[in-house]
Image (cartoon, rainbow, N blue to C red; front, side):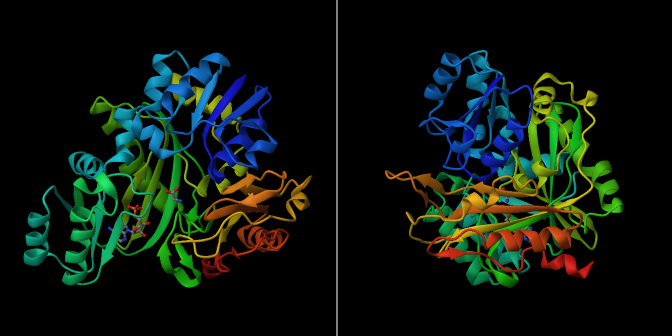
Length: 425
Ligand code: AMP
Ligand code: GLY
């Protein structure tokens, strides 16, 4: 098979590594890819939003399967265009990717079908939102831009003043662009967060092993929200009891709700859960693998990724016995100092060869590229995701931090407490 992966981050590198393990795969292309992906795939200089070029490329190369990693092209309808051209594509169509693309849509869906989530109101008008906040809101309160905002469109406001400033930022100043045309105001929940990824074929859902992200930039969960500074899998806080609750009230209920709305979901649903005292609640849905969740979950998956993707497309996921290794993985993100605000790029990365031939260690590239002299240099905020496998979380964590020191580049920055909470178990 010839496959094409769309995206350029650590998640897409993890997808490429998994795909390369399949005996069915002869050739992997990635658009646009990065320096690490380029070591196992042929990178093509086509952007993830260049739909016409992607479709033309897939036709020309007779691609047998396209895996769309990123949210923007999914929400924009890339899968619809590929399918219209007769090219099998893994990921939800536009009418289903809205599960991630519009927070107002996903909140209304959960309300209509009784799926547990935070109480909320939706606003299309800044004045009405301000009145609501002045009259009845309890604080802290959460403001969410409706659309995609690189994971940054969520504001937690401790006072009325902060909330009013937030309404201005989202709805008037349009800090997140058209994502702020509508806004969700949501009850603030407290609890531990868990990411649960799943494969879905329109009607059947199979849950992957759980993971826990670390979204804030600095140790001790301080600093700004980022795309994710590291994570681990499985989460010891995701107990059998919680799993049973989610299976009963959240997972299948979401898949059935989408089907009932005439929006059958094929692909990955990523449930962003918060474990409150009253039980698990859905904080958000994503319509794709998480980044860096893919970097800890996929290396633990026993199945052939291509078989599972095809089953999701064809509606035969019930015939797949999804299995994970009985081990653990920890991923530490090496970022450029200053991320997520501003940072310099173009610094040479050294030590990458130390990962060669080591089965338990992965160096997933995110923001990297090859420069004119053929050196691999930093090219983004999140540069590398260092993943290690171990028999348990503590071992995986020790190994991940050990390997994080193998590579070096100017302005290298990482959190030192990824997975520290597992010490509580
Ligand atoms: P989201 O993009 O919706 O996952 O939100 C990003 C982050 O904001 C989440 O991972 C939580 O840490 C936080 N968050 C979102 N919604 C809430 C909420 N209702 N209560 C507390 N924290 C929240
Ligand atoms: N790591 C969070 C996300 O991919 O949205």
